[in-house]
Amino acid sequence: KAGVTQTPRYLIKTRGQQVTLSCSPISGHRSVSWYQQTPGQGLQFLFEYFSETQRNKGNFPGRFSGRQFSNSRSEMNVSTLELGDSALYLCASSLASGPLETQYFGPGTRLLVL
Amino acid sequence: GQQVMQIPQYQHVQEGEDFTTYCNSSTTLSNIQWYKQRPGGHPVFLIQLVKSGEVKKQKRLTFQFGEAKKNSSLHITATQTTDVGTYFCAGPYSGGGADGLTFGKGTHLIIQP
Image (cartoon, rainbow over all chains, first blue to last red; front, side, top):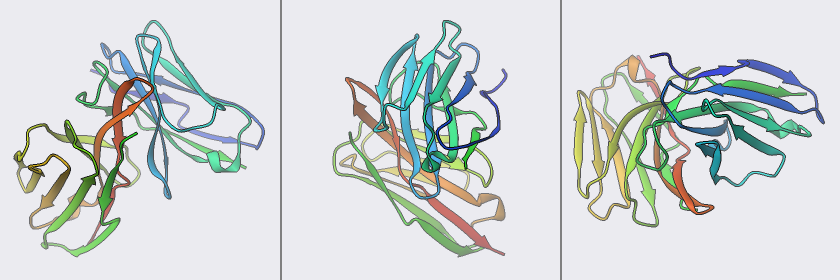
C-alpha cells in the first residue's frame, strides 16, 4: 500500500497570507490527524478528522482549520499567517479513531513564513 | 487535556553504550505508544503498551509500562549509529469530547562514534 502523502512538501509564504496543505491517507484509513512540529514545542496536535467530522481539536487559534472529504483526504488551512507558524506540518492517518490506533505519518510539509 | 512529559530532552552517548528515555504522566494512561523520528524524517510507530507492568522487546529495544500506568520507558542496549533520532512517547489526549494522542516533546539521541 502507498503511504501517507502530503503536498506540497515545501512552501514559502509571507505574513498575512493564507495557506492550504493537503494530505492523502493510506487507502482504507478513515482518520486523519494533523500536527505542528517545531524545535521548541515538539509535536503539537492540531486536530483530527474521522468520517468527515472533526473529532478532536488541540489548543490552536481559530486561524487553523481543516476539513476531510468523503474519500478521507484532508486539507488544513492557516489564515493570516504569522512568523511563528513556520514549522513542519505532519499529517497522520489511522484505520479508525482513538488513542489505541497506530498513527502512520506522512513526510510533512515544511512551511516557512517570511 | 492530559500531557505526557518526557526526559531527558537530549542524550549524548558513545556508540555501544546504553540509552534510556522516560515518559511520565500525572494521570493514569490507558495505553502508551512509542515512535522514532530519524533526522529529516517523520515519526514512525515502534510499539504500543496497554497492560500494567507490560514489558516488550524488539531486538535491542526494551519498552516498559509502569505498574500504575503513569510512566513508561524505552531502553536501548549497545547503541548503534542507526539508533540516532528522536524518540517520542504518545499517550491519550482528551479534548472536545473525543480521545486522541498527545506526544511528549521527545528525547534526541545523539551517538558519538
